[in-house]
Figure 1: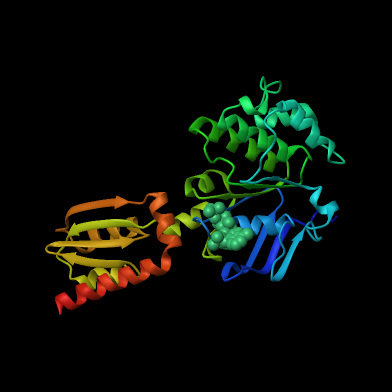
Figure 2: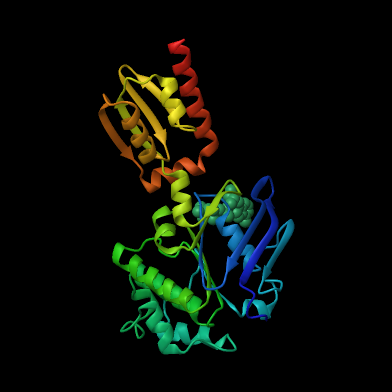
Length: 315
Ligand code: ATP
Protein backbone atom coordinates (compact mmCIF):
# COMPACT_ATOMS: atom_id res chain seq x y z
CA UNK A 1 0.00 0.00 0.00
CA UNK A 2 1.40 3.41 -0.98
CA UNK A 3 1.06 5.60 2.10
CA UNK A 4 0.81 8.83 0.19
CA UNK A 5 -2.17 7.52 -1.77
CA UNK A 6 -4.98 9.44 -0.16
CA UNK A 7 -7.98 7.75 -1.77
CA UNK A 8 -9.33 4.91 0.34
CA UNK A 9 -12.21 3.86 -1.86
CA UNK A 10 -13.86 4.84 -5.09
CA UNK A 11 -16.74 4.17 -7.38
CA UNK A 12 -16.07 4.83 -11.02
CA UNK A 13 -18.98 5.08 -13.46
CA UNK A 14 -21.08 2.75 -11.33
CA UNK A 15 -24.57 1.85 -12.47
CA UNK A 16 -26.76 -0.53 -10.50
CA UNK A 17 -30.19 -1.72 -11.57
CA UNK A 18 -32.66 -3.82 -9.62
CA UNK A 19 -35.08 -4.97 -12.31
CA UNK A 20 -36.70 -1.80 -13.65
CA UNK A 21 -35.31 0.38 -10.84
CA UNK A 22 -32.07 2.17 -11.59
CA UNK A 23 -30.63 2.69 -8.08
CA UNK A 24 -27.34 4.30 -9.26
CA UNK A 25 -26.64 5.95 -12.60
CA UNK A 26 -22.98 6.21 -13.62
CA UNK A 27 -21.83 7.41 -10.19
CA UNK A 28 -18.27 8.61 -9.50
CA UNK A 29 -17.36 8.81 -5.84
CA UNK A 30 -14.03 9.04 -4.01
CA UNK A 31 -13.55 8.58 -0.26
CA UNK A 32 -10.42 10.08 1.22
CA UNK A 33 -8.35 8.85 4.15
CA UNK A 34 -8.59 10.94 7.30
CA UNK A 35 -11.79 12.54 6.01
CA UNK A 36 -15.48 12.14 6.68
CA UNK A 37 -17.49 11.94 3.47
CA UNK A 38 -21.26 12.23 3.81
CA UNK A 39 -23.56 10.73 1.25
CA UNK A 40 -26.69 12.80 1.67
CA UNK A 41 -30.01 12.07 0.02
CA UNK A 42 -33.71 11.35 0.51
CA UNK A 43 -35.27 7.87 0.79
CA UNK A 44 -34.51 5.68 -2.19
CA UNK A 45 -31.75 7.98 -3.50
CA UNK A 46 -29.28 5.10 -3.78
CA UNK A 47 -27.13 5.70 -0.67
CA UNK A 48 -27.36 2.18 0.75
CA UNK A 49 -26.75 0.71 -2.69
CA UNK A 50 -23.50 2.69 -2.97
CA UNK A 51 -22.42 1.47 0.47
CA UNK A 52 -23.28 -2.15 -0.33
CA UNK A 53 -21.27 -2.01 -3.54
CA UNK A 54 -18.26 -0.62 -1.66
CA UNK A 55 -18.67 -3.41 0.87
CA UNK A 56 -18.60 -5.99 -1.91
CA UNK A 57 -22.10 -7.19 -0.98
CA UNK A 58 -23.58 -6.39 -4.38
CA UNK A 59 -21.91 -6.02 -7.77
CA UNK A 60 -22.54 -3.11 -10.11
CA UNK A 61 -24.06 -3.72 -13.58
CA UNK A 62 -21.33 -1.52 -14.99
CA UNK A 63 -18.43 0.53 -13.66
CA UNK A 64 -15.96 -0.41 -10.96
CA UNK A 65 -15.65 -0.27 -7.18
CA UNK A 66 -12.18 -0.14 -5.69
CA UNK A 67 -11.23 -0.22 -2.01
CA UNK A 68 -7.56 0.33 -1.12
CA UNK A 69 -6.73 -0.33 -4.73
CA UNK A 70 -8.41 -3.75 -4.75
CA UNK A 71 -11.75 -5.43 -5.33
CA UNK A 72 -14.02 -4.94 -2.29
CA UNK A 73 -15.24 -8.53 -2.65
CA UNK A 74 -11.82 -9.89 -1.62
CA UNK A 75 -11.56 -11.12 1.97
CA UNK A 76 -8.28 -9.23 2.42
CA UNK A 77 -10.02 -5.98 1.43
CA UNK A 78 -13.04 -6.64 3.61
CA UNK A 79 -10.80 -7.16 6.64
CA UNK A 80 -9.90 -3.46 6.43
CA UNK A 81 -13.51 -2.24 6.37
CA UNK A 82 -15.83 -1.77 9.30
CA UNK A 83 -19.53 -1.31 8.63
CA UNK A 84 -22.64 -0.34 10.47
CA UNK A 85 -25.67 -1.12 8.32
CA UNK A 86 -29.33 -0.31 8.81
CA UNK A 87 -30.18 -4.00 8.80
CA UNK A 88 -27.54 -5.02 11.36
CA UNK A 89 -28.99 -7.50 13.85
CA UNK A 90 -27.22 -9.35 16.63
CA UNK A 91 -28.51 -11.95 19.11
CA UNK A 92 -30.24 -10.39 22.11
CA UNK A 93 -29.08 -13.05 24.54
CA UNK A 94 -25.36 -12.32 24.37
CA UNK A 95 -23.69 -9.73 26.54
CA UNK A 96 -22.17 -6.61 25.01
CA UNK A 97 -18.71 -7.86 25.93
CA UNK A 98 -19.34 -11.23 24.24
CA UNK A 99 -20.52 -9.57 21.03
CA UNK A 100 -17.44 -7.40 20.88
CA UNK A 101 -15.08 -10.30 21.65
CA UNK A 102 -16.69 -12.48 18.95
CA UNK A 103 -16.34 -9.71 16.37
CA UNK A 104 -12.76 -8.96 17.39
CA UNK A 105 -11.91 -12.63 16.89
CA UNK A 106 -12.88 -12.39 13.19
CA UNK A 107 -10.06 -9.97 12.39
CA UNK A 108 -6.30 -10.37 12.05
CA UNK A 109 -5.42 -7.16 13.93
CA UNK A 110 -8.45 -6.19 16.03
CA UNK A 111 -8.83 -2.91 17.87
CA UNK A 112 -7.95 -3.40 21.57
CA UNK A 113 -11.07 -4.12 23.64
CA UNK A 114 -10.78 -1.01 25.89
CA UNK A 115 -10.39 1.20 22.80
CA UNK A 116 -13.60 -0.21 21.29
CA UNK A 117 -15.51 0.41 24.54
CA UNK A 118 -14.15 3.95 24.85
CA UNK A 119 -14.77 4.90 21.22
CA UNK A 120 -18.37 3.71 21.36
CA UNK A 121 -19.08 5.17 24.83
CA UNK A 122 -20.02 1.77 26.27
CA UNK A 123 -18.30 2.07 29.65
CA UNK A 124 -20.35 0.33 32.30
CA UNK A 125 -22.59 -1.42 29.77
CA UNK A 126 -20.36 -4.28 28.68
CA UNK A 127 -21.87 -6.86 31.06
CA UNK A 128 -25.43 -6.15 29.95
CA UNK A 129 -27.39 -8.48 27.67
CA UNK A 130 -27.92 -6.85 24.27
CA UNK A 131 -31.67 -7.47 24.61
CA UNK A 132 -31.88 -5.29 27.73
CA UNK A 133 -30.35 -2.19 26.13
CA UNK A 134 -32.22 0.92 25.00
CA UNK A 135 -32.41 1.76 21.29
CA UNK A 136 -29.61 4.31 21.57
CA UNK A 137 -27.39 1.90 23.51
CA UNK A 138 -27.98 -0.83 20.92
CA UNK A 139 -26.99 1.64 18.22
CA UNK A 140 -23.71 2.26 20.07
CA UNK A 141 -23.04 -1.48 20.29
CA UNK A 142 -23.51 -1.78 16.51
CA UNK A 143 -21.09 1.11 16.12
CA UNK A 144 -18.62 -0.71 18.41
CA UNK A 145 -18.91 -3.86 16.29
CA UNK A 146 -17.99 -1.82 13.20
CA UNK A 147 -14.77 -0.81 14.99
CA UNK A 148 -13.69 -4.28 16.14
CA UNK A 149 -11.47 -4.94 13.12
CA UNK A 150 -9.60 -1.66 13.65
CA UNK A 151 -10.79 -0.60 10.18
CA UNK A 152 -9.01 1.76 7.80
CA UNK A 153 -12.38 2.47 6.19
CA UNK A 154 -15.52 2.88 8.21
CA UNK A 155 -18.94 2.81 6.52
CA UNK A 156 -21.82 4.06 8.58
CA UNK A 157 -25.29 3.79 7.08
CA UNK A 158 -27.48 6.30 8.93
CA UNK A 159 -25.67 5.75 12.22
CA UNK A 160 -27.64 8.24 14.30
CA UNK A 161 -31.19 7.18 13.40
CA UNK A 162 -33.28 7.01 16.55
CA UNK A 163 -30.68 8.66 18.79
CA UNK A 164 -31.54 11.58 21.06
CA UNK A 165 -29.64 14.85 20.67
CA UNK A 166 -27.02 14.05 23.31
CA UNK A 167 -26.27 10.53 22.02
CA UNK A 168 -26.12 11.90 18.49
CA UNK A 169 -23.50 14.48 19.49
CA UNK A 170 -21.55 11.78 21.36
CA UNK A 171 -21.46 9.58 18.29
CA UNK A 172 -20.44 12.54 16.11
CA UNK A 173 -17.46 13.16 18.43
CA UNK A 174 -16.46 9.51 18.24
CA UNK A 175 -16.66 9.53 14.43
CA UNK A 176 -14.54 12.73 14.28
CA UNK A 177 -11.85 11.12 16.45
CA UNK A 178 -11.71 8.07 14.19
CA UNK A 179 -11.21 10.26 11.12
CA UNK A 180 -8.58 12.30 12.96
CA UNK A 181 -6.67 9.05 13.45
CA UNK A 182 -6.43 8.82 9.64
CA UNK A 183 -9.32 6.48 8.93
CA UNK A 184 -11.61 7.12 5.98
CA UNK A 185 -15.26 7.45 6.96
CA UNK A 186 -18.25 7.19 4.66
CA UNK A 187 -21.50 8.14 6.27
CA UNK A 188 -24.98 8.14 4.81
CA UNK A 189 -27.61 10.43 6.19
CA UNK A 190 -30.94 12.11 5.45
CA UNK A 191 -29.99 15.09 7.54
CA UNK A 192 -28.21 18.09 6.08
CA UNK A 193 -27.44 19.29 9.60
CA UNK A 194 -25.61 16.02 10.32
CA UNK A 195 -23.60 16.28 7.11
CA UNK A 196 -22.91 19.92 7.94
CA UNK A 197 -21.72 19.19 11.48
CA UNK A 198 -19.60 16.21 10.63
CA UNK A 199 -18.45 15.92 7.06
CA UNK A 200 -15.41 17.35 5.32
CA UNK A 201 -17.09 16.62 2.04
CA UNK A 202 -20.76 16.19 1.19
CA UNK A 203 -22.03 14.32 -1.84
CA UNK A 204 -25.72 14.92 -2.44
CA UNK A 205 -27.46 12.10 -4.24
CA UNK A 206 -31.02 11.98 -5.59
CA UNK A 207 -32.67 9.45 -7.91
CA UNK A 208 -29.37 7.60 -8.25
CA UNK A 209 -27.45 10.64 -9.45
CA UNK A 210 -25.04 13.04 -7.79
CA UNK A 211 -26.76 16.44 -7.78
CA UNK A 212 -24.13 18.39 -5.81
CA UNK A 213 -20.83 17.88 -4.03
CA UNK A 214 -18.41 20.01 -2.08
CA UNK A 215 -17.65 21.15 1.44
CA UNK A 216 -20.69 21.70 3.65
CA UNK A 217 -20.35 25.47 3.22
CA UNK A 218 -20.12 25.15 -0.55
CA UNK A 219 -23.28 23.05 -0.55
CA UNK A 220 -25.06 25.49 1.73
CA UNK A 221 -24.06 28.54 -0.28
CA UNK A 222 -25.37 26.83 -3.35
CA UNK A 223 -28.67 25.72 -1.94
CA UNK A 224 -29.70 27.89 0.95
CA UNK A 225 -32.19 30.23 -0.66
CA UNK A 226 -33.72 33.05 1.29
CA UNK A 227 -36.82 35.07 0.59
CA UNK A 228 -36.20 38.82 0.44
CA UNK A 229 -39.35 40.96 0.48
CA UNK A 230 -39.44 44.74 0.18
CA UNK A 231 -41.32 47.69 -1.23
CA UNK A 232 -39.09 49.35 -3.79
CA UNK A 233 -39.34 52.12 -6.36
CA UNK A 234 -37.20 50.02 -8.71
CA UNK A 235 -38.92 48.22 -11.57
CA UNK A 236 -39.03 44.42 -11.62
CA UNK A 237 -36.53 44.47 -14.49
CA UNK A 238 -34.12 46.61 -12.47
CA UNK A 239 -34.37 44.19 -9.53
CA UNK A 240 -33.87 41.30 -11.94
CA UNK A 241 -30.65 42.91 -13.16
CA UNK A 242 -29.32 43.11 -9.58
CA UNK A 243 -30.45 39.63 -8.57
CA UNK A 244 -29.13 37.72 -11.55
CA UNK A 245 -30.28 34.12 -11.52
CA UNK A 246 -32.76 34.57 -8.67
CA UNK A 247 -36.48 34.01 -9.04
CA UNK A 248 -38.64 37.03 -8.37
CA UNK A 249 -42.22 38.23 -8.41
CA UNK A 250 -44.21 41.28 -7.49
CA UNK A 251 -47.35 40.96 -5.45
CA UNK A 252 -49.13 44.33 -5.23
CA UNK A 253 -46.57 46.77 -3.86
CA UNK A 254 -44.31 43.99 -2.51
CA UNK A 255 -41.39 42.62 -4.50
CA UNK A 256 -40.28 39.13 -3.49
CA UNK A 257 -36.97 37.53 -4.47
CA UNK A 258 -35.75 33.99 -3.76
CA UNK A 259 -31.98 34.03 -3.78
CA UNK A 260 -28.88 32.28 -2.47
CA UNK A 261 -27.18 35.69 -2.13
CA UNK A 262 -29.55 37.62 0.11
CA UNK A 263 -26.86 39.88 1.63
CA UNK A 264 -25.52 40.98 -1.77
CA UNK A 265 -29.04 41.70 -2.98
CA UNK A 266 -30.00 43.74 0.09
CA UNK A 267 -26.79 45.80 -0.12
CA UNK A 268 -27.39 46.56 -3.81
CA UNK A 269 -31.06 47.42 -3.25
CA UNK A 270 -30.23 49.86 -0.45
CA UNK A 271 -27.62 51.61 -2.61
CA UNK A 272 -29.94 51.95 -5.60
CA UNK A 273 -33.17 52.79 -3.82
CA UNK A 274 -32.97 55.18 -0.83
CA UNK A 275 -36.75 54.87 -0.41
CA UNK A 276 -36.61 51.07 0.09
CA UNK A 277 -39.08 50.01 2.80
CA UNK A 278 -40.67 46.96 4.39
CA UNK A 279 -37.47 44.90 4.13
CA UNK A 280 -37.96 41.33 5.34
CA UNK A 281 -35.51 38.44 4.93
CA UNK A 282 -36.70 34.92 5.82
CA UNK A 283 -35.83 31.28 5.26
CA UNK A 284 -32.41 29.80 4.93
CA UNK A 285 -33.24 26.61 6.80
CA UNK A 286 -30.92 23.74 6.00
CA UNK A 287 -33.70 21.21 5.67
CA UNK A 288 -35.65 23.40 3.24
CA UNK A 289 -32.51 23.88 1.21
CA UNK A 290 -31.87 20.16 1.09
CA UNK A 291 -35.41 19.49 -0.06
CA UNK A 292 -35.08 22.16 -2.73
CA UNK A 293 -31.84 20.63 -3.93
CA UNK A 294 -33.02 17.05 -4.12
CA UNK A 295 -36.23 18.14 -5.79
CA UNK A 296 -34.39 20.47 -8.09
CA UNK A 297 -36.13 19.46 -11.28
CA UNK A 298 -39.70 19.81 -10.03
CA UNK A 299 -38.69 23.00 -8.19
CA UNK A 300 -37.26 24.59 -11.28
CA UNK A 301 -40.47 23.83 -13.14
CA UNK A 302 -42.54 25.29 -10.30
CA UNK A 303 -40.45 28.47 -10.13
CA UNK A 304 -40.49 29.06 -13.86
CA UNK A 305 -44.23 28.50 -14.05
CA UNK A 306 -44.75 31.06 -11.26
CA UNK A 307 -42.58 33.50 -13.18
CA UNK A 308 -44.50 32.72 -16.33
CA UNK A 309 -47.81 33.35 -14.59
CA UNK A 310 -46.52 36.63 -13.13
CA UNK A 311 -45.18 37.75 -16.51
CA UNK A 312 -48.50 36.95 -18.17
CA UNK A 313 -50.41 38.83 -15.49
CA UNK A 314 -48.19 41.90 -15.86
CA UNK A 315 -48.26 41.83 -19.68
P1 ATP B 1 -33.06 5.07 2.28
O1 ATP B 1 -32.64 6.40 2.75
O2 ATP B 1 -34.56 4.92 2.22
O3 ATP B 1 -32.38 3.94 2.96
P2 ATP B 1 -31.28 4.86 0.01
O4 ATP B 1 -30.82 6.18 -0.50
O5 ATP B 1 -30.34 4.11 0.87
O6 ATP B 1 -32.68 5.01 0.71
P3 ATP B 1 -31.32 2.52 -1.66
O7 ATP B 1 -31.67 1.59 -0.52
O8 ATP B 1 -29.97 2.46 -2.19
O9 ATP B 1 -31.68 4.02 -1.28
O10 ATP B 1 -32.37 2.23 -2.82
C1 ATP B 1 -32.30 2.85 -4.09
C2 ATP B 1 -33.42 2.29 -4.95
O11 ATP B 1 -33.17 0.92 -5.27
C3 ATP B 1 -34.79 2.32 -4.31
O12 ATP B 1 -35.75 2.61 -5.31
C4 ATP B 1 -34.96 0.90 -3.78
O13 ATP B 1 -36.32 0.54 -3.72
C5 ATP B 1 -34.23 0.10 -4.82
N1 ATP B 1 -33.65 -1.13 -4.25
C6 ATP B 1 -32.67 -1.20 -3.31
N2 ATP B 1 -32.36 -2.49 -3.03
C7 ATP B 1 -33.16 -3.25 -3.81
C8 ATP B 1 -33.32 -4.68 -3.99
N3 ATP B 1 -32.58 -5.56 -3.32
N4 ATP B 1 -34.25 -5.08 -4.87
C9 ATP B 1 -35.00 -4.19 -5.57
N5 ATP B 1 -34.90 -2.86 -5.46
C10 ATP B 1 -33.99 -2.39 -4.59
